[in-house]
Length: 284
Ligand SMILES: Nc1nc2c(ncn2[C@@H]2O[C@H](COP(=O)(O)OP(=O)(O)OP(=O)(O)O)[C@@H](O)[C@H]2O)c(=O)[nH]1
Ligand SMILES: [Mg+2]
Image 1 (tube, rainbow, N blue to C red):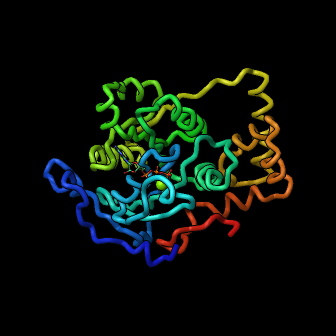
Image 2 (image 1 turned 90 degrees about the vertical axis):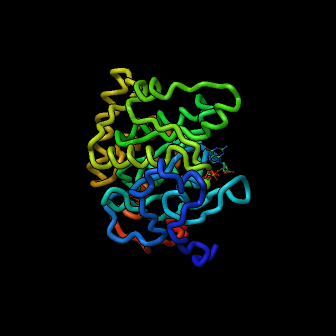
Image 3 (image 1 turned 90 degrees about the horizontal axis):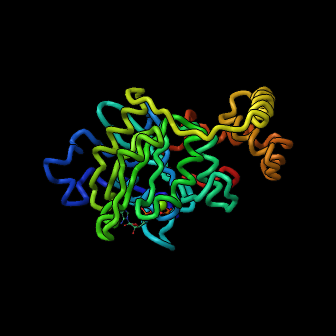
């Protein structure tokens, strides 16, 4: 893919919905690839084909390809937007079912979610298959307390006569849940507000976490301390320790070789990258 294809489009409303006065996108300035000096980094995570890139395009004004193969996202892309006086760098990630997945494009997403230190992780879920999508949601909530759930494809939920109780879901998960129809721009203003509230600390999340049994808790605590000491500044040392306890060979090798520290350094969202370029995986 050439970088020319990623040139920002002007901040023109793409859908009729965005042109109507009820859409408060007046607060949104799509920055395309122009995103120097950001205040916050936001990651778009989610299972494959849930509408992440559609949300990304709607917020940045960029035109990353959406849809099924060959449009599916396999590398991460970045773009920018400003909202309510703050600048955001938005990362579009490949779809992933689990933070334990090991396929190459899923690993791109996993590594950024875990080691890229995003300020807010938006998990875009397909509301028609919520249960399947909750696997990743719960894994993300294990590692961050700054998350927003974008409950997408609500038009399909309605069309199929299904119901999703988003308020109950928000209560049970302990993080904001925003229903959207990303393809039509519906719910995007509310999503922006939720992201900005979480980023600025106006909304405090209390994510649902699975309680570990006492034996595991102690072992995990000790090993987490050791990992954190060996790799100072590495985000999510607890997750790494958990993987080691579960016998994950790839993570064990990354710890042994020290490569795990590079992941933290290369992916850190605090370090400015070549703004607007679609970034290939760090190894490339
Ligand atoms: N009906 C409906 N379709 C949507 C909605 N949002 C996105 N889509 C469509 O879903 C398909 C997948 O959208 P993408 O944005 O490419 O999904 P993605 O999550 O980026 O996919 P991967 O990068 O492969 O993980 C596209 O055809 C979109 O137009 C929505 O709210 N409702
Ligand atoms: Mg995509």
